[in-house]
Length: 157
Image (cartoon, rainbow, N blue to C red; front, side, top):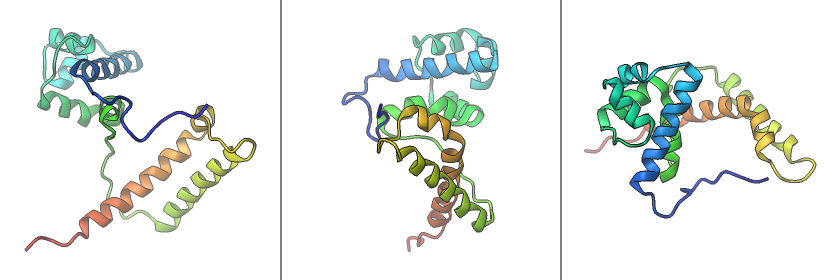
């Protein structure tokens, strides 16, 4: 089964859809981390009651709380909502990593995807899940290169 698109899933991204995505992210974080609404609220700089409203998708979170959530939980928090508008959050990493290792990582990810294509010319969701670590590692290398390129942009006069 082919899934996952680079474009937004919905033509009209409603406020309720965005709130639902934030709520689902917070619920997943609470489940995975065994966090209470008070724990979530502490990260977001809000009360237990406010965190509960966000988690239940019945309250709109401000920008400062959203960014605090991004800083603590990175893409695990932000990416489901950002995906609704065709974007994602990735950390900037400008480390001077070894280019030989980086390119090897990218090539390993590419080879793993080629192997998935062997039988049916499709990379299905299960095959992606099986290769998640390699794909994520390759993505981090590309993000490092993108950041290096961004830093080299000419400065405006």
